[in-house]
Picture 1 (tube, one colour):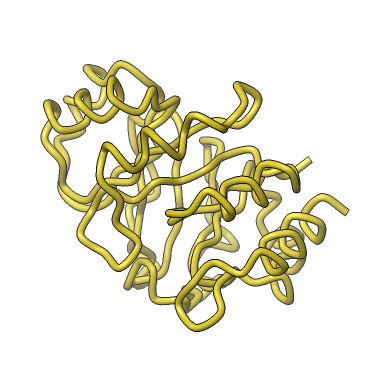
Picture 2: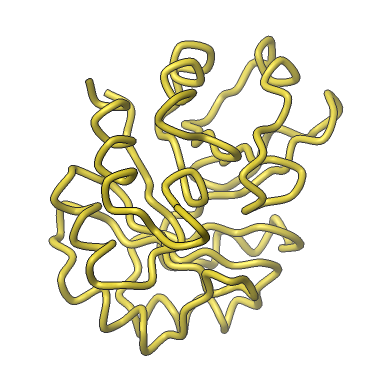
Length: 193
């Protein structure tokens, strides 16, 4: 069964809707973004998340210290790293790592020492999918998350093409830039149907 990560959550209502609907992962964005939350906000939001739903911190080009401070403050279960981060430092992180890879062309490096790979659009958080055909014939050796432009309408197609470990959505469950509780429920239902 494909797992679901609902990312960019910043309200108790959205966290509750995601958890009750069966999300496997809740993503808190610590990078500069309209979805960014502080460690304090994420820590408050995380209190209502049961152990069966894992908390993921999303970072862009973080330092090891920044990662470990967030892991401790929010009790993160995983970290997701976009941007620059030395591959040899991944082993030093105290929780499993999701390494984000933006798919721009068929030369994308699709491996990492991280525990999981996440394939995303050229502009993360844009709501635009990457060209799925660029990955369709690649031999992906690690459990992967598919992200970038997913919605309840196209997620089944992504599941059929990639058989991913998980799918990751943020803007695809928003209306006017805010998390839409109905869209969160619909997305999770569609994935798990």
